[in-house]
Length: 547
Image 1: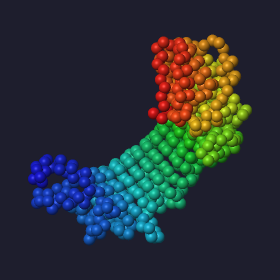
Image 2: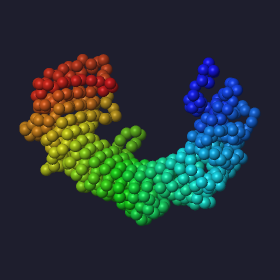
Image 3: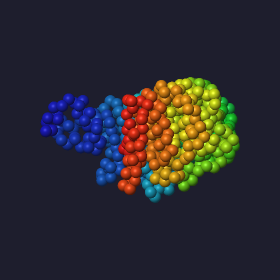
Image 4: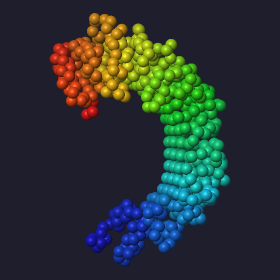
């Protein structure tokens, strides 16, 4: 069998060995005389102290150095030094990296673990070897709570494209700058830190894709200097302070997750300094930092706002994005208490201005002050083609004089008492509607009385004239979590079936029932099925919501 393998092309043998652990690869040298040197040509090397070398008579460092010095591959594609405990190699880390950098390597991964009883100082690594020119390293990953990066002068990693720094610390701000400034073509940066005692300013320069996570710290004015390459920036759990406008000229995607701003001016100075920003996500926990959160970005095309409200009943949001195409608003004005959504203090306003290019909008769980009507939001969505609405209970009206001429798909939540009024208005004001989806997302479907309602106002008083969309355009009707035992919901369903002349399919999803109620449910659904439909080609479907 071994002779047969030996007949394979040398490149194929090396490729096969590259998929094995380094310990297993070196073990092949004892197979035969012809295999003694094959392992030395394998370009992918992985040393795992925790798995491979605990029973070896030689130290981990000795094994690594001996193997690297014996390796004859012209370029190391990857070198992994992982699961290394401080007690095993702390004195030799610089030596190991020096040996690794003595030959060309494309990917270097270093993971240093902390012994349980370790109470010593941080290990200062990455010496002057990084200051000499390195033209092959493309990916560098460093992970350890023990590593202290000290760069008194600029490094020279001319080919580095991807850098991951997990739990490492820097000696000072200068070390941060000297590392990143020495990576002229860096494209992807991930930084995950547990504190910011080492560096007050974290400078990201010339990066295409950046993600930064930290405990709550102040992000400094470093962004005020011009940056012509940063395209993607994700910030999580920090305080942003921008006393003047930033200079992120190439930024296209910005995610702000649980980020706080020093003031409203900082919000403005960040967003106004991103002239070609296209995608913005804002995930907040209230308005303690900026009562009025203004998003004025002419280039913005996609906006997501998630706000689990925990602030004061002042201020709100102002959105002015004339190029906006996709809008997703979720939870603005909600308070979460013991897993339930409760009405508390809420924002005074939520203004969307100049959204004439809007294609799709999802408005989920927005609560406004009693003096502010949700029709202010609807009026700004007149150009939308696909719309999903889940307003919370207050005065809900479709603004008079506003027609949704381009709306072809509407999804409406039926868990609140005003949904039928809004449905009636939306049908009247959406002449080209083709798809109608009703959905009940209430938490407890078994307690039907909590979500029952009376069809009053706009639905019972609606004009006798059938809406244009039902007469000429509606082809798909879907109702998820249809409460079959409520007479009111039956009336709405009947109305749609009786008047939608071009309806092709109507699907009702119902919750599974106890055996005692199955017969009652069957009778109610049979009544719905017996309705004379305006469309002879309409296919009526009943399915379980659990499917």
